[in-house]
Image (cartoon, rainbow, N blue to C red; front, side):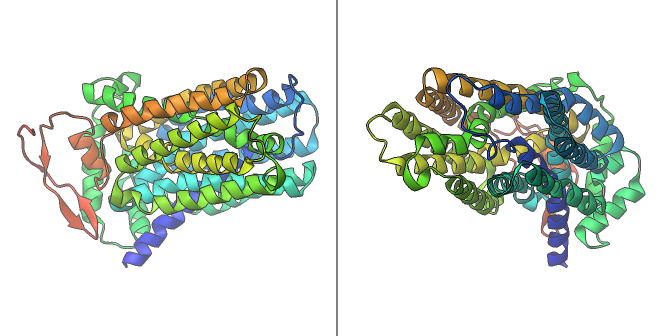
Length: 470
């Protein structure tokens, strides 16, 4: 029974997260194909890198609105035909205009996945598995990067585009069979469907306690208005949004997005010997994927906060190493292994920490009525900052060198080391209902919750006392 309930949650998680691999392969698609650009001639890089964040920015708000109106699963499925259409355009058409259209459409799909995916994963997961299952968002993202790097290094332009069609086709077939989020079904006034969905996800008919807990939480939450003001209506709402925004800034400007796009180019130009090759870029991402997957299994026992702090310290350390390396590159060209090891460490640290836990916190810190809306705001901000980060990387790389880029990433990560221990509040082990009821950021909680265990999951009955917590 326990094995079946866990297996079904894993099936729903993986089939949902195939769409993450899909948009990840879109994001880094140009990297293995593009020739190393000449100094000062970065038009191709800009054309391929900038339009996708623009598309994500434009479609983030519609994606959140659609997810609240039509459902998490229903909207997530729409990302698949968008990406499939984009690859058909790549195969059938040529020219700058076609490429711009492709990248913007792929940006729309990325907006859907980043806004709706974390909400769906959090809402189908049991509290003691939520960190693990939402962590697969980043694992599957890295799988998409590895796939794109590998196929792009082996195949020509058209064949590469055809292989990219695999993700949307598999995603729409596999995820179509999965249930809708029980939270959304209750929000939509469909309790019978919510029961069916929860029974499938748990592999059992004995879900009455958990169902009642979710139902009570949703009904209480839906009595309140849904809108932008609800994101800042109370001091707790303001703190939740501020923490999510700050984490998004750290994640977007700490350098992983430019690194994933320009990794092959950087190794081919800046490394020597065996390290100056596409296979070493693939190896780096495979190692990162393995560590990210491994750490996802401990985040529910160790906690979100310790993992975030540990990983951000790592990001700061390795970014500083790369800053020094590029600052001294004229004298240490033969020591390419230093650069490569630092890049491996930087990539692992980012994806284990800010990259892997951003989606978890984005989903946990907001109630069901504003979860998709908050995801829209965070995704819009991420798109803008990613665009800025990529553009700044290109400009600084050619004008003053990569030492300045990694120097900036060091400062930003160091800021995170100072702020995260104070800002982040632990949510490990709490149900979404308990997080909403107690709050994540209260300096003094007015409510102490009675908790009990049902099939290994912490559930929250009634509030039994109303006292000040010191």
